Each structure stands twice: as C-alpha cells, then as structure tokens.
Image (cartoon, rainbow, N blue to C red; front, top):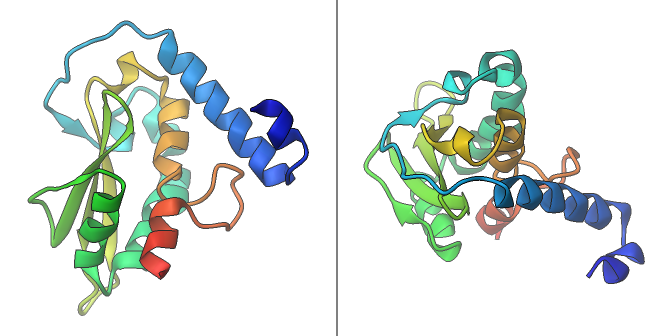
Length: 159
C-alpha cells in the first residue's frame, strides 16, 4: 500500500503515515472494557494542555458544518456506521477505532452560534495516548495533514 501512496499527493502520504502511527499504538494496547463514562478531551491525562487546539481543530468544524442542520450530523454518522445518541440537539456515536467510541454532540445555531463537543469513553487512554486521541478526534473535523481540507464527516455534510 505504501508504494501506491508514494506516488500520490503529499497529503495522502501524510494521512497514511498518521493512520499507520495510530494503528501501531492501538495494536500495542491491552484490550479493556469500556468504562461507560464519557469525558471531555480536557478530562484525559494531559488533555488540558491541548484542549484549545483540539476544540479549534476537531470540534469547531463540526459545529460550523452541522449547526444549521443538526439532523444531518446523525445522517452523516450513520453512513459511517455510527448511531444516534440522545444528547444536545443532535448527537451520534462513531468508532474512531474499534473500542474507541467518539460521541459527537451538537447544539444547533439559534440566538447564539452553534456549539459542539466530542467526548471519549474514559477507557480511551488505555488504547491510545492523549495526543493520538486528539488526532483521532481531529479526523472528524479536519484532515490528518492539519490543513483546511475537510474530513470525510464534513465532506458528507457538504454533499
């Protein structure tokens, strides 16, 4: 697979390398039960240090893409095998990787700008370090190369 990406854009190569790193770290984890307790990114070990960047790179794009059409969040996540959840004005759970659910919550635009959040199961750090979970969450907001290229979830919303 690497040989086929070698001849493609630098973005595709970087996305492949990011995915390869995430999978390498994930593969080294010991399987564990889900905690059943959702936490904000800031609630993860070391998450407070990167929280503002995470909100800007992962959460804000979701609010901007779905704020005026909250049902579309659920529709798009279902295309990616996610399920609707009962939080905020609209919410869905999607697995960034097996055993690492991301719960995306949206409060629609009304008198105030739309808001969103991405929550993790409290067991997520047993599979990936916090910095990898930031990247996993960012895959829902912007591309892995940290450019303004939208993620698959956002691209589904645009269509």
